[in-house]
Length: 296
Image (cartoon, rainbow, N blue to C red):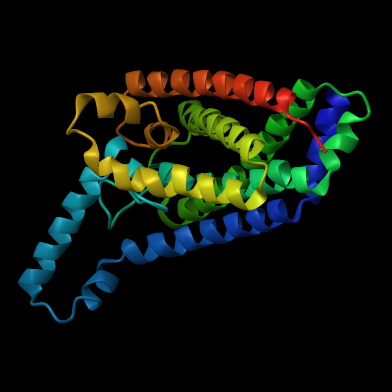
């Protein structure tokens, strides 16, 4: 099993899609730093509102501040696509507030759909699965090795995106408070929670890749189901109690919970438990489906 995991990690580092995603993650983090600088500049904002009177500009800024405050909730952030800056004062942000926004919404899902399409689904068409299994490796070992290798890839991509953006915003605005052991725990626990939710997404996407056996279909279904659809159906939240319970069990909501400034400890615990259950159930179903397949 160890040698199989090692081989899959080697494959990960040799995969062009992974290298490209790492570069994109770095570009996203740099973009977020620049975006934060523009958004936090009151002079820049007012210069873009030259057609308004001073009173209208002040009214617009107040509305912007109010919208920013409301977007801090997990439900609101789960419906957004991209990076967010949920700060108490948009003109005086701190890196601690921006930190959770560096994880993005629906960004990692898109990255993972592409990565799993390249790491898992593409091997059906290339014929490499049969070659690997020919060495006597058990199918469940191969399947789990794929999940572990892809999880490592996700952690690297996420670390690049989050770390660079956090360091950059800390240099610009300061962390916001003394960076003691409590703050270290805050940073690490948020990242660890995001990794657990990310593993749930990986498990579901790997299951999809195993069923459809197509790189393009895996990417397409992954982007639609995990990135676009949550941004649409979130508008139904609060209208039906049964729908709320279903939506709160989705990876989209769990990701929003672990990266939100307003999540309660109860919501966080619930989301992590749901994610762990998802990992186990999706992995078992994927292994069962993979064992029944005729690999050519």
